[in-house]
Amino acid sequence: MNNTIEIKDDFITLGQFLKKAKLIETGGQSKYFIEYNDITINNRKPEGRGSKIYINDTVWINNIVYQVVKVKK
Image 1: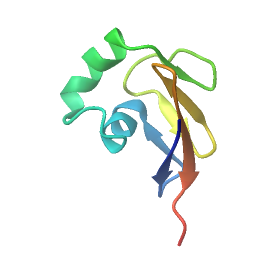
Image 2 (image 1 turned 180 degrees about the vertical axis):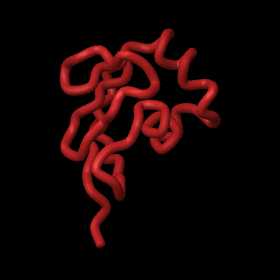
Image 3 (image 1 turned 135 degrees about the horizontal axis):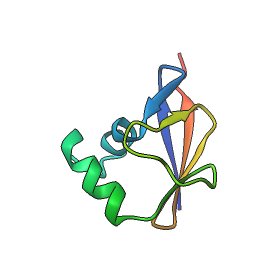
């Protein structure tokens, strides 16, 4: 399953990404979600909820792939 997440800026944080992907409801939940789930950004483990995700990055969360793209105007 491949999911596309659209962003308007050049990057978003992992915490913002998790909310945008509807995996968490509040930013405070991101710390626990990151701790208890298997997450990689471009095949690297994120350092925390402030990790930056850029346009064209690939994010894997528990074997689900998310592709980050720029919002089309």
